[in-house]
Amino acid sequence: MIGTKGAQTSARLVESMLELIQARGYSGTGLNTVVEHARAPKGSLYFHFPEGKEALGEKAVELAAERFRALVVESALEPGSPGDVVRRVIGVLGGMLTDSDFQLGCPVSVVTLEMGAQSERLRDACANAFGSWIDPLAEYLVAQGHPASAARTLATAVVSTVEGAMILSRAQRSAEPLRCAADVIAALLDHPLTGERLS
Image 1 (cartoon, one colour):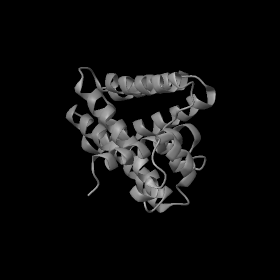
Image 2 (image 1 turned 60 degrees about the vertical axis):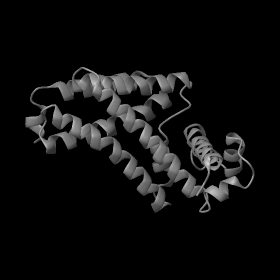
Image 3 (image 1 turned 90 degrees about the horizontal axis):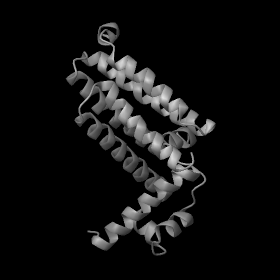
């Protein structure tokens, strides 16, 4: 059993891997750089992650998924329409982009694009991450009165649109694509006939 100090070291390594993937990409992140960034003892990486970079990358994707899912769930607890919820989530993502001077993107999309065809383990981790965002959003939309089949379709479209807008915002160094996505998604989710049309 790993003690508290070991758990803290492991957590720092995962956190560092996540931050470096966001800034440099998965392929551009070397394990020595991760150890230095985490200020971890030499040899600690293979002690905690004996399967190497893929295992660490998988944990970083899981951490990113967990944080974004929490953001969606917390936003849904605040008052407002489904469109308001999505605007809050996109507002946080837009703030992250602008605060980092458009250097930090979504690590899950980065890993998917770089490694999806090369590593089944990482592709599965990314697919699970996206699913963990779609599921609570779909559940929320059902609670708001959308039919289950329509809610799943809408939730998938929302996540897909936001991911695309994040990439476009980084390329253009502007939060405008995210703002446009927020406007369109809010109108879509709050339209009274949306559920009927998609069911």
